[in-house]
Length: 476
Image (cartoon, rainbow, N blue to C red; front, side, top):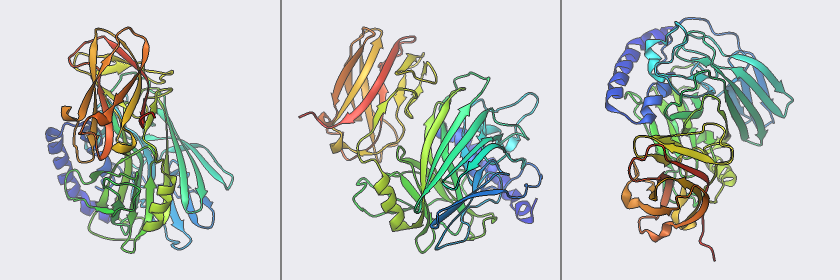
């Protein structure tokens, strides 16, 4: 353990006590699953003292940007630089930083045989991460290829809270370069023997840690995306038990930049929720410094025992204006379309169960003992661009009136004022419905998500299946 880590131990202990108090006060799934996770590196608390292996980088370089993955650390990204800024901007002070895959599910705590999680991280539950575990054991790369154009990594991750326990899943990444843009595709293939359907948990897609010199977290958080409206600097208080700020990025990107506006941008085209901030008061360009900056796109997911979970995230190295332009050029400008062919399309279910992964052309949901609700991930669109919703639904049960809810940018939760009713035909067959969202005066400005309550009171055992939800303009 380094002198810096020893000096931080009392602060880390206070942080853990604060986190325990927060667990008693905050009941949302967001904090239940990630209350420790995003702080696990910032606290600089190691459970063990195993020495990290010597770096074993594999690199892509197109003359504009250079990215390196460490084959000794699960293939996590440990190096990014550009032609104008040759220094490394990725923080690797411990095995929980870097740019790396990180997924979450139950049970809480997660135990393997007689091995129990370290008490500091027991609240995380099931948490395989790409680099290694809190005892400093690195994850294992089992396959890699680099032909100079695409870099492929396949690894067996480690369970962060446990000592040298491999994750019961496989992580894969594919990386390509296009000018200053880094395109990364990710896949987690679960191979869990535990088939329990745990509650939905937030996923870091991926976790991104940079040098603390890139201390300004910038994004567009207003209600007029893609209009060159003024950007926002997102701030946080790293001394609080929950150190990061949660925010909605209306243009689906955020960037960590220095005082000159240069740094690293992160873009997720089907996203909108981000977490981030800076840890520590120091501002350093040392990749091994204890202070760090953090950002992550977030989706909350029901993470099945056998799920094959794929997603795409893009990165840009450069000036803030160039980052915004590149991402706005990449962004899909049309409203969301959800087709439940193979997966839930980032929707989650509460008080209900489904057939699990894969969807096989429809999302079939069985209601539980309480009133069920289906919720989309955070995605942003202007209400005037999608005045209607087309739904293809089959309902098998008593005659019912469903409710379709929406949230605007400043809403913390769904409420009945922002909802419309939808009468469902209860013959078990698929029917197409058109709901005129714009018929409500409350459907306006920037919308950030939808929810469906199929029934207004509990009806255990009844079922509803959805093939698609398409936001669209009115037909001429």
